[in-house]
Length: 474
Ligand SMILES: C[S@@+](CC[C@H](N)C(=O)[O-])C[C@H]1O[C@@H](n2cnc3c(N)ncnc32)[C@H](O)[C@@H]1O
Image 1 (cartoon, rainbow, N blue to C red):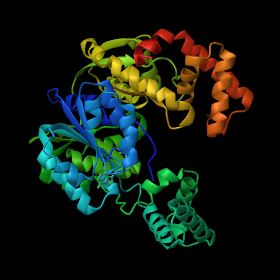
Image 2: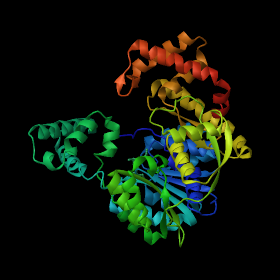
Image 3: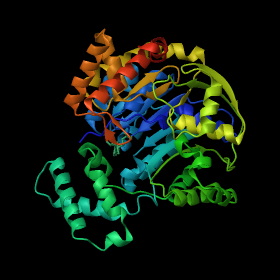
Image 4: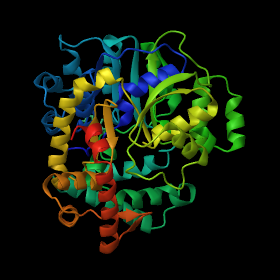
């Protein structure tokens, strides 16, 4: 069953470069990159089209490869999107030495044997000082779900139907009956029931890969570090900026406690327990004597202030809002020096929330403008039949920008309809067909509220038409 379509900003080499510089290392050059197990390949297609990094990728499912290729215009870049398993891919004799090898949602979803193959691939193919990105299901956060997942997989394997969707349904139904019997596990692991309720609302295609995969091995950070150490990989830093601003995520006591821990591996392990983390996104560097410092180095950054299509919400800390305002108008690109702890925290928060993006040098951006125009046209062409389309590529950042399905649908409708009424009518009709509803704070909006919200967003798009067109080459 094909996986869901996502773009992960953490797969953007630009982020890895920032984290390396923030850790006090000299700026790495990432010329060749590779994504292992790219799923539907939305990230791969965007990064390969929007930047001058030569991207390669492999996935074993033909429908995944077909989708990724369908978005990429350049025939040579399409050829580098390979349908094979890890072992077959590694046996090719035309692969470059990679500066960046990335895996999101793969490491903890494959067998120990396949992990060993991935490790052998990294060992053979990663350049000295090269960076590995790993996003994986982590412990302790997933601990309470281990038993639920065993129950689901055992039921699914017994079910009569050959269709995976039916077996998933049968497994969810049986697990619900187990919960209804008031089992003792609910005393020690209340998350068992909550998790079951949560996943019953998820799409089968997501559940198939997330829970019903043959292999599912959430891991502790220290275990991953131990598996990567023989490859010469040391921890470089978190890739997920939205998880890096401890000022606002941890209590003062927790921060003081972590500040006393010198060793970065122990610090991360303790932080995972404090946050009960269930997913980690990290960069690892192949270098001896890699940094272990807990403080960040001074950075020179080029930042692109996101077009004002999403409002800075009320949960954004006042310090971040103030810092953002000091950068410049939405849509502009500025160079800023990031020095103090407060500036690092504000940058982390803003990047994590998509309030700013990393901007490339102007000389670099023109090269990819035509390819970005093509991939964005293909994405917009798909919007009305695909509710998972929510990202556009940008040559300004070399990556994708999350705008949400509704904004993409408005942009797609604005290509054909002139009047605001016609645009909104078209978007509402397509949303109904796809079964999508706008919601605010978890509550679905009424038709009238939806219409008003779309009118406001349409006006914002019109007001920023030049910025949008320039940012996404549309
Ligand atoms: C959980 S999905 C994650 C997909 C994608 N990275 C994402 O996050 O959207 C795992 C992916 O790994 C691929 N995969 C699993 N085993 C593989 C193997 N042995 N060789 C190549 N790809 C594999 C699957 O086809 C699937 O696309």
